Image (cartoon, rainbow, N blue to C red):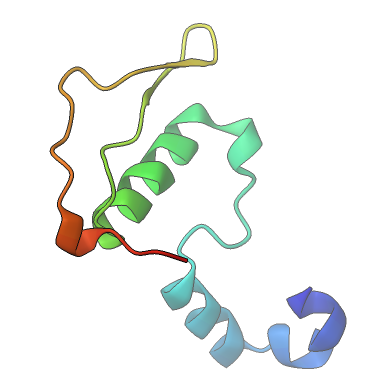
Length: 80
């Protein structure tokens, strides 16, 4: 969407730096790398104070549940 609406601006180094600051995985094809996907899941969960994401089993490309359940903190829950 950004490339469609702000084509010239997105191409500038300033915009690229700001977009990467906001969305570190911007421009990375996560479907091609289980490790990159896991890294982004972990980062997102930490920043948004979410439960630990499932671990990707890179040998088969599937996910497994975290080894320990994470305690939910009602103060971090948000109704949308």
